[in-house]
Length: 486
Image (cartoon, rainbow, N blue to C red):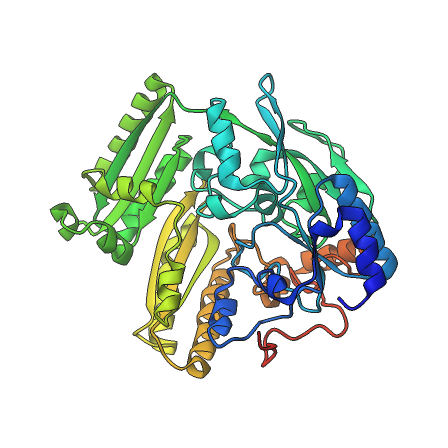
């Protein structure tokens, strides 16, 4: 940032030691874990720009003061948690000011009477869960990114944890918040179990990815750590039978801690040496938890449903190995070897789930290449439907050839999801990369979202160019040969 007067003014607000202007330090804030950005970075390029400056405030008052100064100087802002997102939600497109929230990293209060916790938005997810566990509680929100994400980031991206079938997604867990609006005012939504006083203000902010407000504090539901659990690992004859099992469990009103179904490819990589999977090549992992008597009853019901669908119970080793490594990402190992690895998670109703998988797999083989790795698992389940989490991987090749193929993979997966009546995003958010599909996702609803954005952020200060909202004038175009060399 070349405006020395603005830098000096911002330094007064947060302290000069919490103002980052050095180029090398700012490079670390220039992208998140968006695979497309990582592909570009292998050739020394950025999808967007560097942030113009990075600030590290410590209080909601400091955040509000920074926002007021930004509004007065027409300086756009992007809030930053830990950069663990995979859709480019924090990528600067015009040297925006970045607000790193990680100094706001405390649990403020545990309310044991109402089973609530109030926490600052910049607290690391693993530290948050560990602190709750020490008090006998769980947040119920355990994403794969737990160790590298912030609590505020969970809410901003409307995330989902691996135990969502029992505890819900983040929008079911957050009951109150504080957030700074684009004019510097502090919005507070009091924590309550229910309201019928108009549309939900909470739901406007949760999932807005920093485009409407900067979340500074959250009040969330918490649960006592379960007294008992039972692990059930099953081999099933087909993907259809596995999907039917999950649907039956959820429509019966059970609340399993974990439901994970794997297609044949992902099952094979996790069950090597277990003979049962030779003729039953699809694995399901079900975990029930709670009071011991309830666990015993639910486990028996699950086993009964499974037997009716031709399942055989097997050893728990595949689940144990997954649980041990559940927060580790394997993306880097593929990236370092020159592959083009990506994941896409979508939501679909049960009636369309089997067809969606088959159609995407067939189109990828026919229209892109039979050499593309395509696999899926289903790990967030509901009475109405399921999240299909797909892994897509191109072999090492020239990037000029790979990027159009990568784009086609996204077009097929996203287009077929919409054609099957599904949603283009289950829990990763939309960020930058899903912007082109937001109008088709929401229809007239996107006009409503734009009106909200224009009304509360008329200067387009907050995270411009994300969620399908327009960028500011002069922003780089991330979808062309747009990258400045690092």
